[in-house]
Image (cartoon, rainbow, N blue to C red; front, side, top):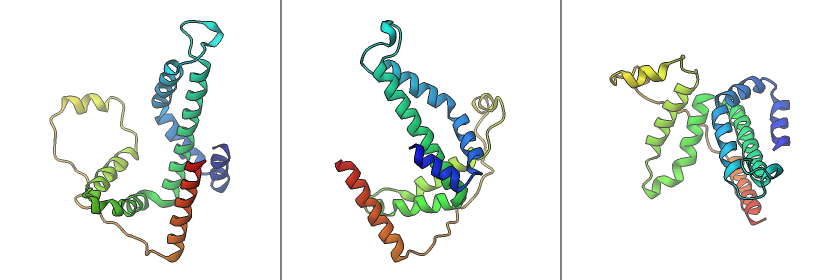
Length: 173
């Protein structure tokens, strides 16, 4: 994970600022995740104190928090290189195979697009109180969502095949 994050930062140093913003926004999630895993994983208590987290819990909590931080670095890299529209177009393309199973991929893509649009700027302080107190109003957001899709090439098929084989190989290990 460290090599993945270091490689992303070396390829694009501007990524650090955006990544730090994502980590800062996820700080309560990280803390909650760490506390839940540290205290709810069975094992030996730290320093034999009955109220302390377990050694195994701390190790598992650290691992999961590091995974989340690395995932936020990858997400920041994707947003920096693809932008909002590229992420939505990529998600739409990834969800196309499940349309045959009756999954409404367009609805998921539109909802995620709205969420990502609202997350681009942090809400002002106390906005959640006003949202709870106010009556729902008409949204002033986009009326339609336009996707610009890149053409599919043989190289794309080979990359998908290599990624799938790599994931299956990792799962079998």
